[in-house]
Length: 497
Image (cartoon, rainbow, N blue to C red):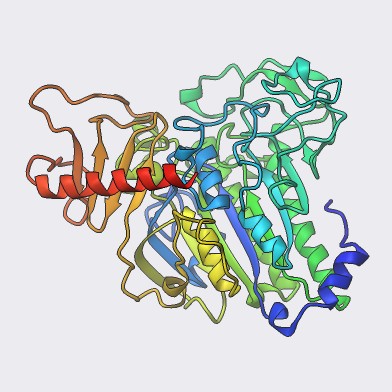
């Protein structure tokens, strides 16, 4: 349970100006590996019922051309919270592979949470962190290359949510299939991982109950994690509502990076067998349930009208061709590829926004947007200024939220895959550089161009949305233009670090 609002916070809230009282609450729910084709509001042929996601779409704006900054999880989380692409940190490919990895968010880097806290918001995160930590050793000094034997789990952990601007936190350190398996609350380990799990002994490619071997805390149960995260998120909403009823006017920011439906696919007993898409479908239904619980908490506390709610995903679904054939379900919709790939299925994600009275209900936007836009958008929504260097990769999409029919802003968006392959998108054109493969899970991941072959991949998404026809050789002018644009973005960002 999140701790109650302190008297000091209530006092600050009571001193807030009338303008502060009008600022919306912000709730961002980030699903993990949820495909754009899983939600029936995007894919009427989805074989998985998602009534709560559908409700958000019905009551808000559905963005059809939204993209995660990466096709895998850690770099997307970094981009969402900082407004910066993660490829200009040390993480130029891959993810953080354990919960002991050192922090990715640089000291002093503004985040969405620190920005909102500085603007009078009460901030909290419940879910999967997966952005690294500074663990303490048995003598209290920071562990630079952490492993289980080096860590003193009784000491506070730094460089986590608290240092990133969150007043309150209840998280697992990384993905639910990565050790150590434990809870951290307000940057302290709830129970040390004194046990050991041999892992699920299942193949990663098979999904299902896969998790890696490693230390585990007493009582840590994989199928309890999504319910626990959801209940802590709901408890935070209830606590903020109680503070408001007591006379406070402090708005809140709640970030809910759900650990589902990423592997291990471990739906709670009440969801098992409810879908026709196996454990994955059941876990998607539980993910949808979690969204519904948060919606219900906002509703019963009279907060829905004053809350800007975003529901999205960190990348596409891990759903190869064999799963499509087996279950007759297209988790990534009509898009080519899957999680980790540079193709659209890797990074085109659901993105739903509900803000009653500001976001027209039941509307659709075709604007090209990214999760890196959230920091600039939130700043715009609360009418607060960001330093120009705070979010160089994002732009405010508030105009598109308020008027989904508004002409999209001309922009260039960068995509990035598991193995570090780059793509750049501008309007109808998408360029993949130096690779004729997927860049991710779909084979071949890396295929450098051979003599006489195109130097990469160019697709006209207007006429070829499924990326079937490489038109690199037919449009050398477009190739040159997009290569130049990507080079300029990468060069600018090196200078900005």
